[in-house]
Length: 129
Image (tube, rainbow, N blue to C red; front, side, top):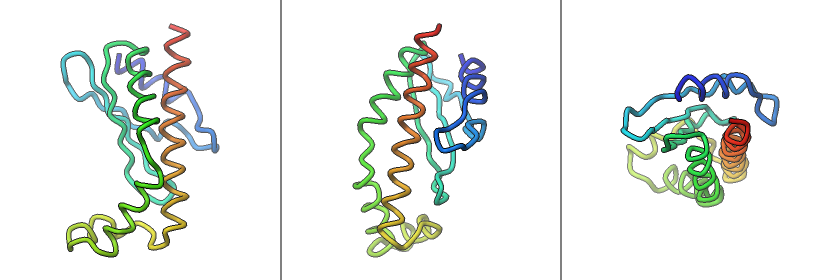
């Protein structure tokens, strides 16, 4: 399954012209299938999407749930507040993130789009399988 997923992602392009081969796929080693997809956002956030499933259809369903549950506004505000009010570890962790809430929101919306792309890509692959 991992090789199929890696091949699928490396042969597709992101909607904004990015190269999906930038996605890294890691096998979590769990029984029943678990994969982490990793890529950097436009503003440099390390985006990791963890999917569980033994088939492409199960992975697509998990990707849909991850996409639907990702709240871009909440994500941006959490980072903004951590940079402003967080402890030293939080400020250090988000040091590279923009200070502007507007930029954080734009990046969070891009991350939401990345989730959607993963969901749609896996759904198409599941239908074709």
